[in-house]
Image (cartoon, rainbow, N blue to C red):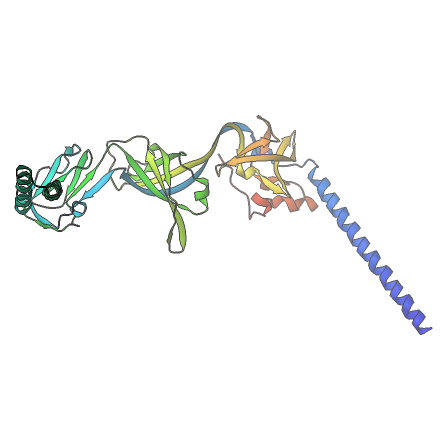
Amino acid sequence: MRKKRQFLGIIIILILGIGGILGFNYWKSTLKSAAQAENQIPLTADLAGAVEVQRGNLKKTVSASGFLQPVNYANLNLRSSGTGGGIIEEILVDEGEVVEEGQKLVSLEDKEERLNYLQAKNAYELSKIDGSPSLLQEEKKLALDLAQEKLEAKTILAPFSGKIINIYVEEGDYVEPTDSIIYLIDETAYEVEVSISEVNCLLVEVGQPAEVELDVAEGEIFSGKVTEVADYTVAESNVVTVPVTIQMDEVAKFFRPGFSASVDIIVNSAENVLRVPVTALATQGDSTIVLKVEGDKVVPTPVKAGISDGYYQEVIEGLQEGDKIIVNNYQMNLGNSGSNQRNSNWGMGGRPTPGPMPMMR
């Protein structure tokens, strides 16, 4: 008898448990259906916050800063010439002077080099007169070529046409092979090198247009183009970046090496598209919603969004030009009470916002 009562007790507990679960699921389903229905009900709102959907242009950009510099520049020294140093005998140009490629800029004392050259030349000529074997003549010719190269290395030539910006030495100075002698730049082409974050670098490609603003000419925008995205990264203070080079499309007379520059690389753009302020958008589940005005009511309306410039968002589907929407989505249930009040704190990404968001103009 005792076992029978225990068995009946277990049966009753199971029935109550199953009933509770079924009841909870029914209650939950009812609330969900009510909430879904609630979002389809036209809501009242302050229509003073309504704006018309209009067309416009959008540009998605990646921003960075850097410094203006010539595409072609050189700090000239003796390192590449193989000369072991020497005394500056004559400076043939002045700072600010425009020179041509191959023009003589500076000459060093070259008595020893000239003597070696003359001796090598005489030895080579004698070998030809004496009828020396061809192998010996070739040896003398190589010695002459080396002597000529060392003599010519005592004169610094302009590697390209450009402008002399700095002369670091004076006549009579002794210079080592690594000492800078002249700073030469080509003023016909300038570029800006910037550092892009490792995330944004995936958006940047060679050929993309860019807008460049110089601190020295605030408000004036210069156009440029991405010419190089480095194949390596730079890590500094635990921040990883990628060097990107933007070449200027034009050169102004006031350009100087080292000017500070701000760059916006245009990674995506859209022209004459429907657009709305980003503050007009909210997310509801997997949908993007705007509050569309219909008469004196507003209706949550799903839309398909495109690119954004941070201020405006492209709308691909769901709205037409001339439709009115509430620009600040916190007004969704303004004037309503009860269960609708939960929606009055919508924000971007479905997260509650602490208060009203300012209207974008």
